Length: 553
Image 1: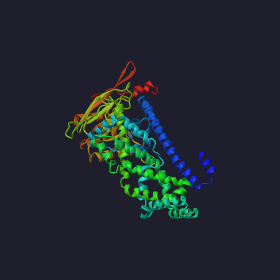
Image 2: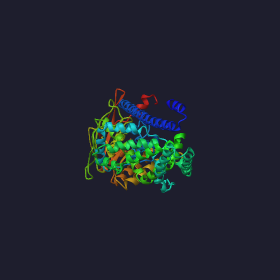
Image 3: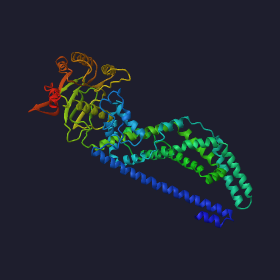
Image 4: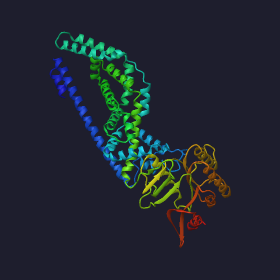
């Protein structure tokens, strides 16, 4: 209103009107900037509140706020499908605290990579990050603001393939033209030139800018879609740059962005350029800026030079941010689960592959969890028998997750643990694929062949739940026995759960075989389980009892 009143009152004085407009434009831009800063601060604080509310729900057993990773399910993977790594109430949902889509993908990759190298470095990184609660929450709160309509891959591809179009003369021409414009405006204010000469000068500026207007507009449309992404990533990178890390893994990740000049400064530069470029959208302001300062040409050149100078570094920045986001999830588990313990990592000459005291499945509630001790020596296979519902499947998944968590560098849910790094492979359930015209039995055979092929090339910990489920008892017993003997010729180790007690005779024939079981107790027509792993062969099976109890037979 004040601007309009001034324009009306002093309409006869063009100089005063122009001066008033300039002053109020500057004041408006200052207030807009201040307002946006307050809005950003409010958003961050609200995000931190959300983070902590979600964490309180998780501590109470509700993980619904976190993505379950269902889209990462792969029935052909070495172990993820068998141990319910992804999906509703999965280990991924239990673990996942990523705030970025790329971080979520990286976490899924970490879980499925079967990478068992550098565990000491991973442990140190997780231990260090676990203590940095404020840093992790600040990072996540900022990451939650990242717009998801543009992915890091799209940006990387766009930057890598971009072709410049403004000539090198635009490095200095806008500056020279701006100085000359100041001279022309001054001459006009001092009545040296008339308004027509001023308009002619403006026309020259618009002609220069208009020569590239089509390509400039396309560049603006592309880069403006990425602005909020760049702004958030600038702050994420700044958080990482300013944090003091001691573990080597985190230092290496930080080094990808802690360059000279700093990655955050380089992103700040592109953000400022986009902010400046955006002024072209203001019809009146854009007209004056282009007419007197060659605004579009100036910022097109700045942005194109930024692309040229940074295109090779962008992928490193994105990689490090995704890695940090994923590792924050691992650190969050270590921070929350104070009763978990880091396994002692053994060397290749160790007698044991894995040895645990009072181990529990990480997703079981404390009130129902039964702790088990177990140890498996090098090239040893346990054959585990047991009644239905006695705890075999839970034990297999407990063991699988303990290996997975150990390889990730995580603490495990056990009072103590010793572990020799090894890859994991399983066959606990088989997908019957009608689309591939494969029978259940053929699919199972394919999986068993897959395990043999892998175990002959590398050292694996193999977990099998009921070999040859899709055939008759005699054929199953003979085939299972031959398959186990084939496994004994590899350098692998593992656990085989079965209802077939004839398989237990292998303990008498091979010193690498040890029999263990989960028992059931039937007393006074009541069935009870203690869910404890014991040495020897299961004596009590319960299928007939349960069928009778449920009036099936």
